[in-house]
Length: 136
Image (cartoon, rainbow, N blue to C red; front, side, top):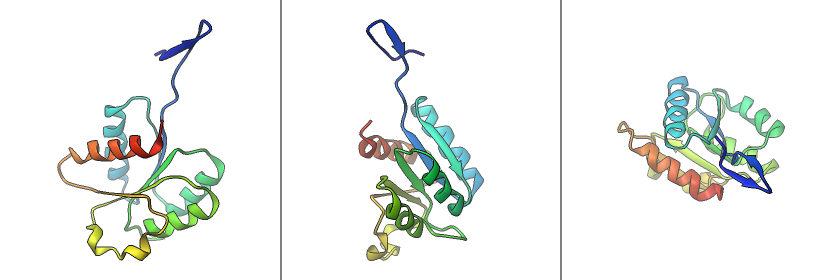
């Protein structure tokens, strides 16, 4: 669907491109579904393995990274640190863990935190954070 025009040429506004990393496939599916429901211009690449996410970041452009904290191979904070060594991409830690349980010095590389909740209304908070820090 065209979103604007310039000198008679119709174009679509590019959406926010998100890399979502979580080792639970259901979380990837639900998050992608709810974010796309809130904004159909959002592009979400979903990755189960944080090491694969590092490859994706090196080979693609992303406006923001959204990552779970507790994953088997590499936790979300470790992933943020690895990514920030190469690219300055905004990073949201998106986890069911309380932030108070995470040691704040360990949060280097993480720009924001959003807590997963059972109630799907938390997807609105995640979406608003994404919009706020992506500046698109």
